[in-house]
Length: 187
Image 1 (cartoon, rainbow, N blue to C red):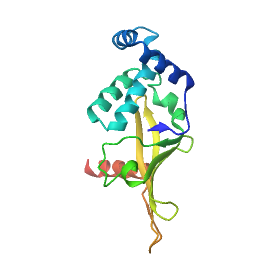
Image 2: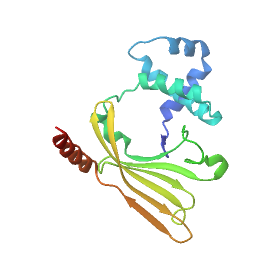
Image 3: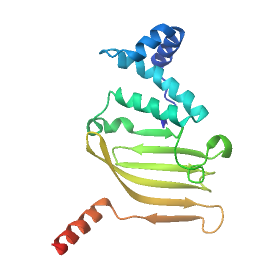
């Protein structure tokens, strides 16, 4: 995902500079010092977007792994709020039957992340408000590198009967209580 309507002038300028200096770029990619990760991220992000266009899964995985190692916000508990906003799906390993390719189907797929409310809403827009799907998931950072997720609702919209179907799931706390009760009964 990438944040919609978000553009970093500094990153674009840096990327153009580094792509224009291939020798420095090669050294940059192979050297590790305090300031290098700051310079590597824009280059890797540009490469990632190029890999998205060709749907090169092995290149995407390799670049994502490299970017993960350079992540300046590795403690999700501290930095959870940075995820808030609308995000557009650029690539997924899910089959097209689950998440249609926008380029071939015209179906828009995106996420709205509300960290203050602890909710992530995945949207498959087939012509909302008449057609589409919204899947809301509770999200809570539990450890520096982990976010606990629990399904909250699935809303399916159709231009035929029934117009709207909503499935609600019990909160994660419900399952915690059930687990504790079952643990006591089994002992």
